[in-house]
Length: 88
Image (cartoon, rainbow, N blue to C red; front, side, top):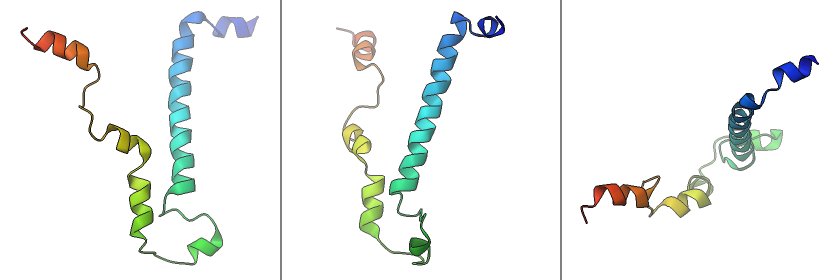
């Protein structure tokens, strides 16, 4: 009976928003640990010191999402923006 009091339908969007935020943070954490060239988890890699591996850093920074949005216009809803801004 007590659990029913706290689980109201009005709270579902809040749960969804927090869940998405936690998911994005977790994805970024896993991405940084697994592919960031400056993060070394194993002892053998940490003993290597500072590496000048520019190709690996370029591959990490120019990921597929950045390549996808590189030549796009920075608008959220371009059709609505053009509808309200164009006098035609």
